[in-house]
Image 1 (tube, rainbow, N blue to C red):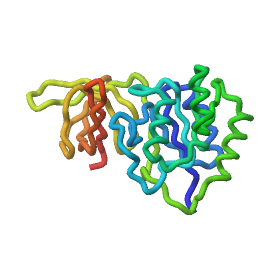
Image 2 (cartoon, helix red, strand yellow):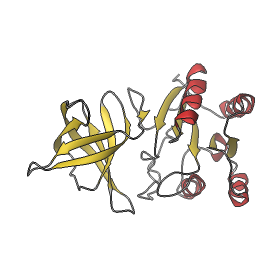
Image 3 (tube, rainbow, N blue to C red):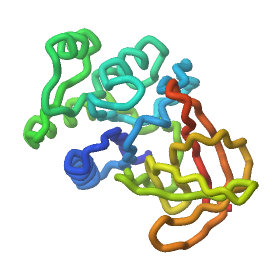
Image 4 (cartoon, rainbow, N blue to C red):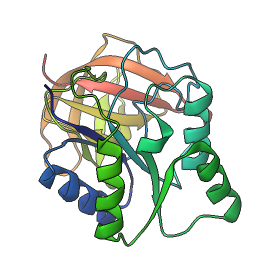
Length: 223
């Protein structure tokens, strides 16, 4: 039997920290992302490939880039997300009335920030009655992801120009970043930390294009 898993999409350091501490104390494997880049229906708007859900609980902020949290939950519902909307929640200071109406229709929850731990505890306990820990989950990772805030890296282009990129999230073995440069899967690039001058080679594992014309890149550093 596996551990319960929570996925948190949030770019607010306070909300991210509070949720991470709550679910880790409850024994969850907790994955944290500043943007919902791992969700197949985000940006690319593809059907969920299945057959397994990515998590047992999903929490996301309302103000996510590309599409807001309400629209993302609706897109997931329409594109065969394997996780029940009853185990999903928007975490925000407030929501417009039409957003609350959509959540009610989907069956998802609204958790107001700053969080009421009693409300969060009650919601999580209810979600746990619907979890099947004998079924595997998708998005298998050996390490957690840490959301990144205003962190910058650089990488070297073929003509020795330097491209500066914005980090979305990172782990001990990888980094997800946003760039204006089109990179190719399996391409090797050299990253350089902005402030320490340290360099490290990585291999591009995936590339996604968003509607703004920029690229989200998943880079493996464990090569």
